Length: 279
Ligand SMILES: Nc1ncnc2c1ncn2[C@@H]1O[C@H](COP(=O)(O)OP(=O)(O)O)[C@@H](O)[C@H]1O
Ligand SMILES: [Mg+2]
Image (cartoon, rainbow, N blue to C red; front, side):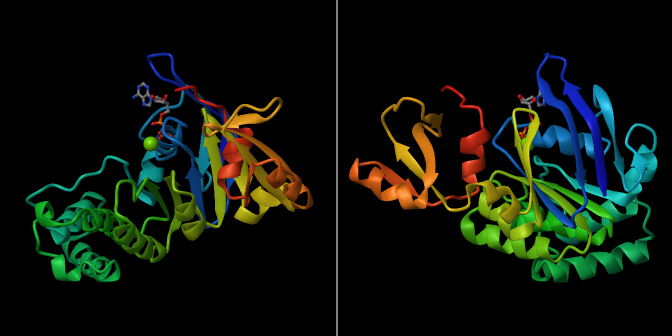
C-alpha cells in the first residue's frame, strides 16, 4: 500500500515535475501511464527514496519516505528506466552482486539467482557476458534481479521501452512471474492493461485518472469518438486531430458528414483530459 500526500517536486531548473499529487495505491499491480515528461520517473524515484520531494510525503506500507529510507530500501527494489547491464558480467553475476549488496549471504544469493534465471527463461544464458545478450534478454535480466531480491514492492520504470514486440512479450511473461507488489511505468496502453489491475494516468505532473480499465472508461460507456482532420468549432484538439464524443446511436449522422468514427480506447482519457502540446 502506497499513500501519497501532496507530493510536489520542483527541480533546480524550476520545472515543476509533480504538482502536489495525493493518491492511494492499494492494488497488487499498478501501471502509471503517461507520455514523456509526465512525471512518472520523478514519482517512482521519490517513492523509492532515491530523490527528495520539494514538499509532501508518502508512506510505503506505513513507512515514511522522508524518515524511514533505510527500512524502505530493504523492502523495495527499483529498476530504473536507464538501467544497463555491465558488459562483461554475466546474468548470474549481476544477480549475485545485486543480492549480496542487499545483504544476502553468498549461498542464498546463488540459490535465488538460479531460481530467478530459470523463472525468466534466462537459464541457458546465465554465463553469457551481458554485452552479448539481446535487448529483450537484458531487460529480462533486470526483472530477474527484482524477482530474486524477494522485495515486498518492485518498481519497474519503462521495462519494455524500445523493445521489439516479441521481446516485449517475453519481458511481460517475466514480469507476470513477479510475486511482489508491482508499480510499473509505461507509455504503452496494452502493456498497462496486460500487466496491471489498476491504472494511473499522469499528465503534466498530475494524476488525471485512476482505476481499473473498466472504471476509468465508464464515462465513455455507449460513446464513440468522432474525428476530423480539419478544425471544427467547439471540438477538442487532441493528438493532431479534432475530436468529439457522441452516443453511438448518433454515429451514423457523422459518418454521413464524412467524419471518422472510432471505438473508445484508453487513449481517449488523454484525448479528453490531456493538455494539447503544440509542436
Ligand atoms: N534531473 C532533472 N532536472 C531537471 N528537470 C528534470 C529532471 N528530471 C526530470 N526533469 C523534468 O521533469 C519533468 C518530468 O520528467 P520525468 O519525471 O522524467 O517524466 P517521465 O518519466 O514521465 O518521462 C520533465 O519536464 C523533465 O524534463
Ligand atoms: Mg521516465
